[in-house]
Length: 97
Image (tube, rainbow, N blue to C red; front, side, top):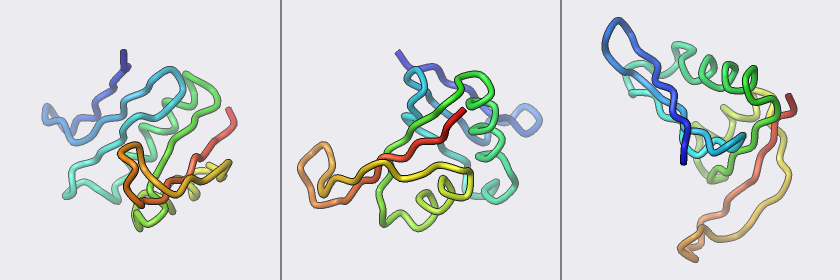
């Protein structure tokens, strides 16, 4: 059961974060609203409520990987393939509360 919070601009949803306890299962911001602080705000509020957070991210994701590092996440481990066994390297990141 995921806990999902939605960010809105006016009455329009523009992003969300889904948490499985303290694991970020998904974080998405509409393309036209990226770079406005919405993702940062969602992660910050999640950390305020949950304390330490973790997330798994593709290392070649040129937006997500540096985004999480800039928010204070640090790399814990890597694995060479995704859940489907495909050769997409993933990094487990953690941010202390």
